[in-house]
Amino acid sequence: MLNRETAYSLAFEEQRNALKRKTALYEKALEELKAKNNRIDEIDRTLKALGAKIGITVLSGDLKELDRMQKLITALAEERDAILQKNGVTPAEFSCQLCKDTGYIDGKVCSCIKDAAKKLLIKSLSEELPLEECRFERFDLKYYPDEDTPAGNPRRRMETLLKLCKDYAESFSPSSPSLLFMGDAGLGKTHLSLSIVYELLSRGFDVIYGSAYNLLSAMENDHFQNRTNESFSAAVTCDLLVIDDLGSEFVSPYIQSMFYNVINTRLLANRPTIINTNLNMKEIEQRYSARISSRFIGGYTAKKFIGNDIRQIKMTEKK
Ligand SMILES: [Zn+2]
Image (cartoon, rainbow, N blue to C red; front, top):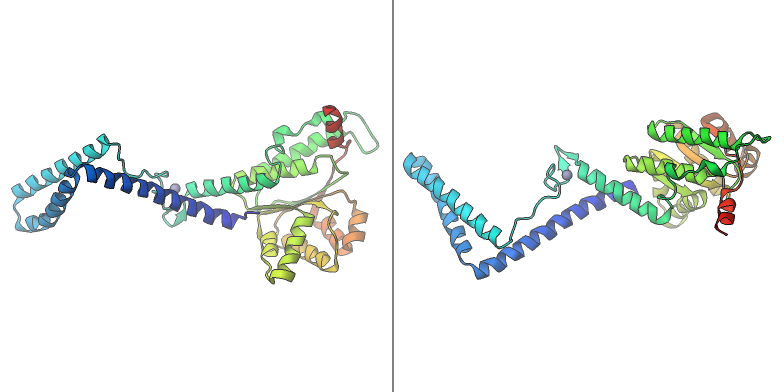
Protein backbone atom coordinates (compact mmCIF):
# COMPACT_ATOMS: atom_id res chain seq x y z
CA MET A 1 0.00 0.00 0.00
CA LEU A 2 1.17 3.47 -0.88
CA ASN A 3 1.97 5.67 2.11
CA ARG A 4 1.91 9.43 2.27
CA GLU A 5 5.65 9.88 1.93
CA THR A 6 5.82 7.69 -1.17
CA ALA A 7 2.79 9.45 -2.61
CA TYR A 8 4.55 12.80 -2.27
CA SER A 9 7.75 11.63 -3.92
CA LEU A 10 5.70 10.02 -6.69
CA ALA A 11 3.82 13.27 -7.19
CA PHE A 12 7.10 15.22 -7.46
CA GLU A 13 8.50 12.64 -9.84
CA GLU A 14 5.42 12.75 -12.06
CA GLN A 15 5.57 16.52 -12.20
CA ARG A 16 9.25 16.48 -13.16
CA ASN A 17 8.65 13.84 -15.81
CA ALA A 18 5.65 15.67 -17.25
CA LEU A 19 7.71 18.87 -17.57
CA LYS A 20 10.59 16.93 -19.13
CA ARG A 21 8.23 15.33 -21.64
CA LYS A 22 6.71 18.67 -22.55
CA THR A 23 10.11 20.35 -22.88
CA ALA A 24 11.45 17.49 -25.00
CA LEU A 25 8.42 17.69 -27.31
CA TYR A 26 8.92 21.43 -27.71
CA GLU A 27 12.62 21.08 -28.41
CA LYS A 28 12.03 18.36 -30.96
CA ALA A 29 9.37 20.40 -32.74
CA LEU A 30 11.69 23.42 -32.70
CA GLU A 31 14.56 21.42 -34.21
CA GLU A 32 12.28 20.15 -36.95
CA LEU A 33 11.09 23.65 -37.72
CA LYS A 34 14.64 25.02 -37.76
CA ALA A 35 15.57 22.37 -40.33
CA LYS A 36 12.82 23.67 -42.62
CA ASN A 37 13.08 27.34 -41.84
CA ASN A 38 16.58 28.83 -41.46
CA ARG A 39 15.23 32.27 -40.52
CA ILE A 40 14.99 31.10 -36.89
CA ASP A 41 18.70 30.32 -36.67
CA GLU A 42 19.44 33.62 -38.35
CA ILE A 43 17.36 35.47 -35.76
CA ASP A 44 18.96 33.52 -32.92
CA ARG A 45 22.45 34.43 -34.14
CA THR A 46 21.54 38.11 -34.51
CA LEU A 47 19.91 38.17 -31.07
CA LYS A 48 23.00 36.62 -29.53
CA ALA A 49 25.27 39.16 -31.22
CA LEU A 50 23.00 42.03 -30.16
CA GLY A 51 22.97 40.71 -26.62
CA ALA A 52 26.77 40.81 -26.51
CA LYS A 53 26.90 44.31 -27.97
CA ILE A 54 24.22 45.88 -25.80
CA GLY A 55 26.43 45.95 -22.71
CA ILE A 56 29.08 47.94 -24.52
CA THR A 57 26.47 50.33 -25.87
CA VAL A 58 25.13 50.93 -22.37
CA LEU A 59 28.63 51.82 -21.20
CA SER A 60 29.23 54.09 -24.18
CA GLY A 61 26.18 56.13 -23.22
CA ASP A 62 24.89 56.26 -26.79
CA LEU A 63 21.21 56.34 -25.91
CA LYS A 64 20.05 56.63 -29.49
CA GLU A 65 21.94 53.51 -30.53
CA LEU A 66 20.70 51.73 -27.39
CA ASP A 67 17.12 52.56 -28.25
CA ARG A 68 17.63 51.35 -31.84
CA MET A 69 19.09 48.05 -30.58
CA GLN A 70 16.33 47.46 -28.07
CA LYS A 71 13.68 48.03 -30.72
CA LEU A 72 15.50 45.63 -33.01
CA ILE A 73 15.69 42.97 -30.30
CA THR A 74 11.96 43.31 -29.60
CA ALA A 75 11.12 43.12 -33.29
CA LEU A 76 13.29 40.04 -33.82
CA ALA A 77 11.88 38.28 -30.78
CA GLU A 78 8.37 39.03 -31.99
CA GLU A 79 9.19 37.76 -35.45
CA ARG A 80 10.61 34.57 -33.96
CA ASP A 81 7.51 34.05 -31.80
CA ALA A 82 5.29 34.62 -34.81
CA ILE A 83 7.15 32.02 -36.90
CA LEU A 84 6.88 29.48 -34.08
CA GLN A 85 3.24 30.23 -33.48
CA LYS A 86 2.40 30.01 -37.15
CA ASN A 87 3.94 26.56 -37.23
CA GLY A 88 2.25 25.41 -34.05
CA VAL A 89 5.48 25.22 -32.03
CA THR A 90 4.69 26.58 -28.59
CA PRO A 91 6.98 26.49 -25.57
CA ALA A 92 6.08 23.99 -22.84
CA GLU A 93 3.35 25.42 -20.66
CA PHE A 94 3.53 24.90 -16.92
CA SER A 95 0.66 22.84 -15.54
CA CYS A 96 0.88 24.86 -12.33
CA GLN A 97 1.26 28.61 -12.69
CA LEU A 98 1.78 28.94 -8.93
CA CYS A 99 5.04 27.03 -8.68
CA LYS A 100 5.98 26.89 -12.39
CA ASP A 101 6.09 23.12 -12.00
CA THR A 102 8.87 23.20 -9.43
CA GLY A 103 6.55 21.80 -6.77
CA TYR A 104 7.61 24.46 -4.27
CA ILE A 105 6.55 27.98 -3.35
CA ASP A 106 8.82 29.84 -0.92
CA GLY A 107 10.33 26.57 0.20
CA LYS A 108 6.92 25.04 0.94
CA VAL A 109 5.31 22.21 -1.00
CA CYS A 110 2.87 23.65 -3.56
CA SER A 111 -0.82 22.78 -3.52
CA CYS A 112 -0.50 21.07 -6.92
CA ILE A 113 1.80 18.45 -5.37
CA LYS A 114 -0.46 18.05 -2.34
CA ASP A 115 -3.47 17.50 -4.60
CA ALA A 116 -1.60 15.05 -6.80
CA ALA A 117 -0.37 13.10 -3.76
CA LYS A 118 -3.91 12.91 -2.35
CA LYS A 119 -5.24 11.61 -5.65
CA LEU A 120 -2.47 9.01 -5.84
CA LEU A 121 -3.19 7.86 -2.30
CA ILE A 122 -6.91 7.55 -2.85
CA LYS A 123 -6.35 5.83 -6.16
CA SER A 124 -3.94 3.33 -4.67
CA LEU A 125 -6.22 2.66 -1.73
CA SER A 126 -9.29 2.36 -3.97
CA GLU A 127 -7.62 -0.46 -5.82
CA GLU A 128 -7.61 -2.45 -2.62
CA LEU A 129 -10.72 -1.13 -0.90
CA PRO A 130 -14.28 -0.30 -1.95
CA LEU A 131 -13.67 3.38 -1.14
CA GLU A 132 -16.20 4.67 -3.67
CA GLU A 133 -18.88 2.29 -2.48
CA CYS A 134 -18.25 3.06 1.15
CA ARG A 135 -19.07 6.74 1.31
CA PHE A 136 -21.35 8.42 3.82
CA GLU A 137 -23.87 9.15 1.04
CA ARG A 138 -24.17 5.46 0.32
CA PHE A 139 -24.82 4.40 3.88
CA ASP A 140 -28.46 3.32 3.76
CA LEU A 141 -30.42 3.42 6.99
CA LYS A 142 -33.30 1.51 5.41
CA TYR A 143 -31.46 -1.74 6.17
CA TYR A 144 -31.80 -1.10 9.89
CA PRO A 145 -35.26 -1.99 11.24
CA ASP A 146 -37.09 0.84 12.93
CA GLU A 147 -38.32 -1.25 15.82
CA ASP A 148 -37.52 -1.65 19.46
CA THR A 149 -35.38 -4.68 20.24
CA PRO A 150 -33.75 -5.70 23.54
CA ALA A 151 -30.52 -4.14 22.19
CA GLY A 152 -32.29 -0.90 21.23
CA ASN A 153 -33.83 0.53 18.06
CA PRO A 154 -31.40 -0.30 15.21
CA ARG A 155 -32.57 2.54 12.91
CA ARG A 156 -32.24 5.18 15.59
CA ARG A 157 -28.93 3.79 16.86
CA MET A 158 -27.43 3.75 13.39
CA GLU A 159 -28.76 7.21 12.61
CA THR A 160 -26.87 8.45 15.64
CA LEU A 161 -23.73 6.54 14.67
CA LEU A 162 -23.83 7.83 11.10
CA LYS A 163 -24.04 11.38 12.42
CA LEU A 164 -21.26 10.71 14.92
CA CYS A 165 -18.98 9.44 12.16
CA LYS A 166 -19.79 12.37 9.85
CA ASP A 167 -19.07 14.83 12.66
CA TYR A 168 -15.91 12.93 13.51
CA ALA A 169 -14.65 13.20 9.94
CA GLU A 170 -15.68 16.83 9.64
CA SER A 171 -14.06 18.01 12.85
CA PHE A 172 -11.13 15.59 12.71
CA SER A 173 -7.81 16.66 14.13
CA PRO A 174 -4.77 14.48 14.87
CA SER A 175 -5.84 14.55 18.52
CA SER A 176 -9.45 13.44 17.97
CA PRO A 177 -10.70 10.65 20.25
CA SER A 178 -10.17 6.96 19.51
CA LEU A 179 -13.22 4.89 18.59
CA LEU A 180 -14.02 1.24 19.11
CA PHE A 181 -16.77 -0.02 16.81
CA MET A 182 -18.27 -3.22 18.14
CA GLY A 183 -21.02 -5.50 16.91
CA ASP A 184 -21.67 -8.46 14.67
CA ALA A 185 -20.41 -8.77 11.11
CA GLY A 186 -22.35 -7.05 8.36
CA LEU A 187 -23.63 -4.09 10.36
CA GLY A 188 -21.68 -1.36 8.58
CA LYS A 189 -18.57 -0.93 10.73
CA THR A 190 -16.27 -1.16 7.73
CA HIS A 191 -18.54 1.07 5.66
CA LEU A 192 -18.55 3.88 8.21
CA SER A 193 -14.85 3.68 9.00
CA LEU A 194 -13.98 3.70 5.28
CA SER A 195 -16.23 6.72 4.83
CA ILE A 196 -14.14 8.50 7.47
CA VAL A 197 -10.94 7.34 5.76
CA TYR A 198 -12.13 8.69 2.41
CA GLU A 199 -13.03 12.10 3.84
CA LEU A 200 -9.73 12.43 5.67
CA LEU A 201 -7.60 11.30 2.75
CA SER A 202 -9.31 13.84 0.53
CA ARG A 203 -8.37 16.49 3.05
CA GLY A 204 -4.74 15.42 3.07
CA PHE A 205 -4.53 13.65 6.42
CA ASP A 206 -2.10 10.81 6.81
CA VAL A 207 -4.36 7.79 7.27
CA ILE A 208 -3.46 4.12 7.46
CA TYR A 209 -6.22 1.59 7.03
CA GLY A 210 -5.90 -2.17 7.10
CA SER A 211 -7.37 -5.34 8.47
CA ALA A 212 -5.83 -6.44 11.75
CA TYR A 213 -4.50 -9.42 9.85
CA ASN A 214 -2.73 -7.35 7.17
CA LEU A 215 -1.41 -4.65 9.47
CA LEU A 216 -0.10 -6.96 12.13
CA SER A 217 1.46 -9.42 9.70
CA ALA A 218 3.17 -6.55 7.89
CA MET A 219 4.71 -5.48 11.19
CA GLU A 220 5.66 -9.02 12.05
CA ASN A 221 7.28 -9.56 8.63
CA ASP A 222 9.18 -6.31 8.95
CA HIS A 223 10.51 -7.44 12.25
CA PHE A 224 11.42 -11.03 11.49
CA GLN A 225 12.27 -10.88 7.80
CA ASN A 226 13.47 -7.42 6.99
CA ARG A 227 14.72 -6.49 10.44
CA THR A 228 13.14 -3.05 10.14
CA ASN A 229 10.16 -1.52 11.84
CA GLU A 230 8.83 0.68 9.07
CA SER A 231 5.25 -0.61 9.30
CA PHE A 232 5.28 -0.17 13.04
CA SER A 233 6.54 3.42 12.89
CA ALA A 234 4.05 4.25 10.15
CA ALA A 235 1.22 2.78 12.24
CA VAL A 236 2.13 4.69 15.39
CA THR A 237 2.83 8.05 13.74
CA CYS A 238 0.02 8.46 11.17
CA ASP A 239 -2.79 10.97 11.86
CA LEU A 240 -5.40 8.22 11.98
CA LEU A 241 -4.94 4.47 12.15
CA VAL A 242 -7.94 2.30 11.29
CA ILE A 243 -7.73 -1.36 12.21
CA ASP A 244 -10.52 -3.37 10.65
CA ASP A 245 -11.79 -6.75 11.74
CA LEU A 246 -9.84 -7.13 14.94
CA GLY A 247 -10.14 -10.74 16.04
CA SER A 248 -9.76 -12.37 12.63
CA GLU A 249 -5.98 -12.54 12.77
CA PHE A 250 -3.75 -15.21 14.22
CA VAL A 251 -2.55 -14.16 17.64
CA SER A 252 0.99 -15.02 18.70
CA PRO A 253 2.71 -13.65 21.79
CA TYR A 254 4.72 -11.38 19.49
CA ILE A 255 1.58 -10.07 17.75
CA GLN A 256 -0.03 -9.55 21.14
CA SER A 257 2.79 -7.41 22.47
CA MET A 258 3.20 -5.51 19.23
CA PHE A 259 -0.51 -4.78 19.09
CA TYR A 260 -0.37 -3.50 22.65
CA ASN A 261 2.59 -1.28 21.73
CA VAL A 262 0.72 0.25 18.81
CA ILE A 263 -2.39 0.93 20.89
CA ASN A 264 -0.47 2.21 23.87
CA THR A 265 1.97 4.39 21.93
CA ARG A 266 -0.85 6.07 20.04
CA LEU A 267 -2.86 6.66 23.20
CA LEU A 268 0.13 8.16 25.00
CA ALA A 269 0.80 10.43 22.04
CA ASN A 270 -2.89 11.38 21.90
CA ARG A 271 -3.25 10.08 18.37
CA PRO A 272 -6.61 8.65 17.35
CA THR A 273 -7.24 5.07 16.30
CA ILE A 274 -10.46 3.47 15.07
CA ILE A 275 -10.88 -0.24 15.65
CA ASN A 276 -13.64 -2.47 14.27
CA THR A 277 -14.31 -5.77 15.92
CA ASN A 278 -16.94 -8.48 16.19
CA LEU A 279 -15.55 -9.37 19.61
CA ASN A 280 -17.04 -8.16 22.86
CA MET A 281 -14.91 -6.75 25.67
CA LYS A 282 -14.68 -10.09 27.45
CA GLU A 283 -13.45 -11.79 24.27
CA ILE A 284 -10.96 -9.00 23.65
CA GLU A 285 -9.57 -9.51 27.11
CA GLN A 286 -9.31 -13.27 26.63
CA ARG A 287 -7.69 -12.93 23.25
CA TYR A 288 -5.29 -10.05 23.83
CA SER A 289 -4.89 -9.78 27.60
CA ALA A 290 -6.42 -7.50 30.17
CA ARG A 291 -3.91 -4.73 29.56
CA ILE A 292 -5.32 -4.22 26.10
CA SER A 293 -8.97 -4.33 27.10
CA SER A 294 -8.24 -1.86 29.88
CA ARG A 295 -6.59 0.47 27.36
CA PHE A 296 -9.75 0.26 25.26
CA ILE A 297 -12.01 0.89 28.23
CA GLY A 298 -9.93 3.82 29.44
CA GLY A 299 -8.95 5.45 26.17
CA TYR A 300 -11.58 4.61 23.56
CA THR A 301 -15.16 5.61 22.96
CA ALA A 302 -16.94 2.31 22.33
CA LYS A 303 -19.96 2.23 20.02
CA LYS A 304 -22.15 -0.79 19.52
CA PHE A 305 -23.59 -1.46 16.05
CA ILE A 306 -26.93 -3.26 16.08
CA GLY A 307 -29.33 -4.64 13.46
CA ASN A 308 -29.41 -7.51 11.02
CA ASP A 309 -26.58 -8.62 8.75
CA ILE A 310 -26.83 -6.22 5.79
CA ARG A 311 -24.70 -8.31 3.48
CA GLN A 312 -27.25 -11.08 3.85
CA ILE A 313 -30.19 -8.75 3.29
CA LYS A 314 -28.50 -7.36 0.16
CA MET A 315 -27.86 -10.86 -1.12
CA THR A 316 -31.52 -11.84 -0.77
CA GLU A 317 -32.49 -8.56 -2.47
CA LYS A 318 -30.49 -9.51 -5.54
CA LYS A 319 -32.14 -12.91 -5.85
ZN1 LIG B 1 2.34 24.02 -8.10
